[in-house]
Image 1: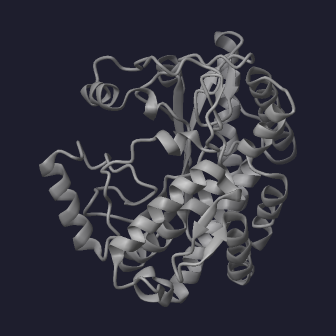
Image 2: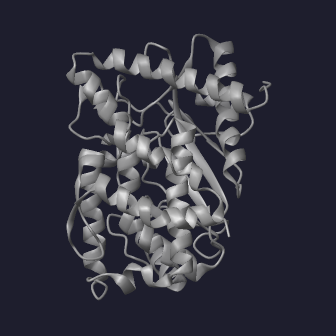
Length: 381
């Protein structure tokens, strides 16, 4: 059994120099498949659910290639990697839709802390018991996926001290989100948050992972992992997704992996929530080199070592389902570092942030061209 997979991809637009320029109003008006964020400097596209990995590669690439071609018609514009305004104005909000009251609320309440770019990974799980079991397990292990994806060590031309500045500043809302024990728990909790005003609408649940569906909180059919920074290399993103899917399939096969059943802290769900939150902070700071607390037995473990353990544990499941080859780039990320770590090494060697980002912009474009030439049909605008 393989599960359906889809992505929500948020990207910054700007110039090859690294300057981030708001163009989303024009993009959304002229191109199908793109939606605006509250700040005009980033734009989002979504891939359709797919069960197999091969078509997902082109599903990720084609909108970006189309967007790149369109941006060239507007001027010398391109796509910017990273999950924060690395070499850009991070003080001012640039509204994409001044008449949208929800956008007004976001600007007033959160300011530019929400002007980030990321990847949301959606995994289809129609059975709600399995879905909430998966949400609990993935909540406990979400810091590992942040560690693999971290790509925001800079903000406003400064080194911040965080590998994922995005997740360190992002306003997780509401501030306290429980481990949902079942579907009705989630319904009751969501209705209560809406009544209290801690959530403005059903979409206003900004946590590392959440149940998702066509009519939240009632009609649910997928798990959405929201913690990942922007991963621009599609093959690396598919590897991270394969690790996530294999872990969920392992849980479906063995429900005893549920943290409410197989942890030394199973009798204290609040402790598990606090542990997960602390691990998220640690992963946002040091990513693969973060010291985390394992949810099963409380032992201290480096994120990279935990990921290695997880890889070994889920590989037979991925092999059985025919997608183990997509897991292998995980080892490359562990060996070479994530984007944040690579960029910080370059900065420690004396490169200015602007130059690091310019090189990353060029590298991202070249990677997409190389993959297009190997794998995808030509793209028409």
